[in-house]
Image 1 (cartoon, protein in one colour):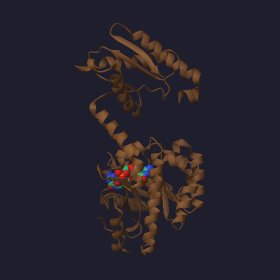
Image 2 (cartoon, helix red, strand yellow):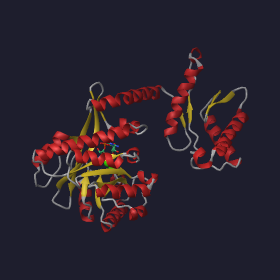
Image 3 (cartoon, helix red, strand yellow):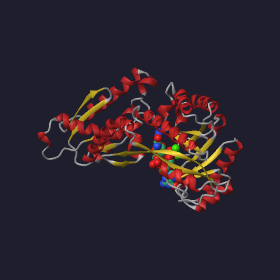
Image 4 (cartoon, protein in one colour):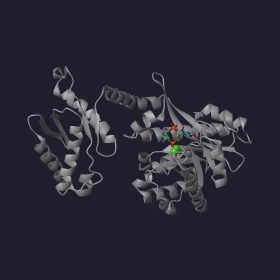
Length: 390
Ligand code: C2E
Ligand code: CA
Ligand code: CA
C-alpha cells in the first residue's frame, strides 16, 4: 500500500529505517537480517516478553523521529517463535517458518502486534490449506447446502416474506462446517466468488422448482462478497442465471455488506441502478457494524437496509439504543428504503421495532437458519397465516 500510495522511494525509505533501527539493537544477544521484500527476522535472548513490547515501541518512536510520520497503515505485525529445549536439532529454516506462521496471523489483526507461535496455529494453517484445496471439488459434488433463515413481515400480520440463503458445508469427512470457518478463508482468494455464484444458482434452481410445485412467491436473498461485485461479468452473470431459471423480477435479493462502501461508493451506486433495472432487489447488509455513514445513503439507490445484529445486542442504555434505531428506521422510510432488523432474539425488541416502523425481522426470535426442505415445509404450513416462530 505504501509503495502504491506514496511511491517506491518512500517504501524504500521505510525499509531502510527499519534496518537502521535493527542495527541499533544488534549486539551479542541479538542478531537481525532482512529476509526479502518487507520481511525482517531476528534472534534475540529475551528473559520476558516486556522486552519485545518495548522494542516495538522503540521502533515506532524511531520511525516517528526520523520524519516518517506514523501513518495509520504503517502497522508492524510481528510473529515470534520461542526456542524450546531440543530445537537445536531442527534446521533454522523450520524455526523461521514457525515464526512466519505467527507473523501471518499477526498480519490479520489490526494495528501493530505480537503473535506467539503455538501448535494450534500450525494445526489451523494445515486445516485451512486442506479446506482450501478441497473447496472446488466440494462445490462440484454439491457439498455446500443452502440453509434458509425466514424473514418475517412484522407490519403485516407476521407473514413470512422470504428468506436469506446461508451457506453450510456438509463435508462427508468433516461433518457440518459453519460459514465462520470457511468464508474468511475463501475471501482470501477467488473461491468466495465461486461460492457466491454457486449459492445464487442453487437458490434460483430451488426457486424454480418451488414455483413449479405451486409454492407461494417469496423473496430470496443471497450474499455477494466484495470480490464478486468487482468482477467484470458480475451483472451479466447474475442476470443470465436469473433468466436461465425464468425467475420473475423483484424476487431475488442481493445482499452487499456495508464494508463494500469503503471500496468505491460511486461504482457501487452505479451497479445498484443497473441491478434494479434488471429486476434485482439490492440490500445493504450489516448496516451500522463499521464504516456506515448515514450521509452515504443519500446517493445510494438501495431498496433495503439491514440493521446489523450489533444494534440488538443489549447495550448499557437501552433508551439511547432505541432512539438511535428508531431514527435510522425513520430516515430509511423517508428515503423509501425498507428496513430489516437482523439478530433479534426477544419479543420485547420485536414489539419495539414494530412500533418504530421496522418492516421485517430476521432473527432467532422467529427462526434460525434451516435446511431448504424445512423452509419449504414452513411455507406450506403457514400459507397465509401469521408466523409465531419455531
Ligand atoms: P450475515 O450475512 O450477516 O448473515 C446473518 C448471520 O446472523 C447468520 O450467520 C445467521 O445465522 C446469524 N443470525 C441470524 N439471526 C440471529 C440471531 O437472532 N442471533 C444470532 N446470534 N445470530 C443470528 P451464519 O449463517 O453463521 O453466517 C455468517 C456469515 O457468513 C453471514 O453473515 C455472511 O456474511 C457469511 N455467509 C454465509 N453464507 C454466505 C455466502 O453464501 N456467501 C457469502 N459471501 N457470505 C456468506
Ligand atoms: Ca447477509
Ligand atoms: Ca448481516
